[in-house]
Length: 175
Image 1 (spheres, helix red, strand yellow):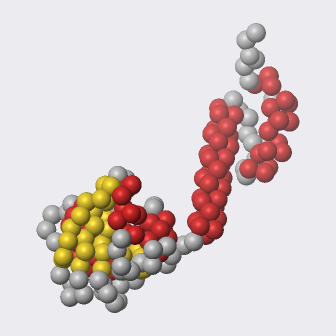
Image 2: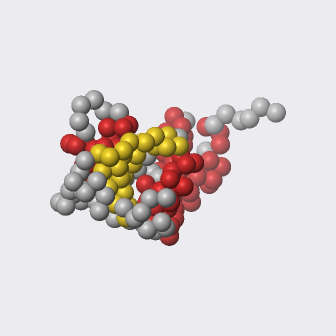
Image 3: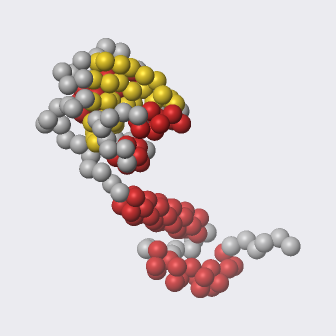
């Protein structure tokens, strides 16, 4: 089976085609818009790409045309980069790394898995921001001599009552 290596980018992708013996038979620079029509014209091939933010989507798109998409961590591709690093050489290295039988590949994620992962990431970020905000308020109130209990739940229960009982320590708003 021949192999294609694609260096995924924002606008311009670099693609390299290798034959069954590992010889590079073509190099092509393709815009984001033209990649799928380009892949649709190819017979089913193995397509290697670095695992990055859009790699799962591109692999699903390629799979729709009968191609096998393999994603690998960038550190697995690095040993195959020859000479100075640039996008075309990265595509060559990706194609070469995709042919290695012992190479570990990133398992494919379907859309549902990515949706759940995105929800978890957003939730974790919101929790971190909430904790940071509570810690900041802890510090600000401590400067006025108001000590609040630790923990988000305890803070939430105590903050309004504590501020009402200690209002003489805080400056009153100007009207």
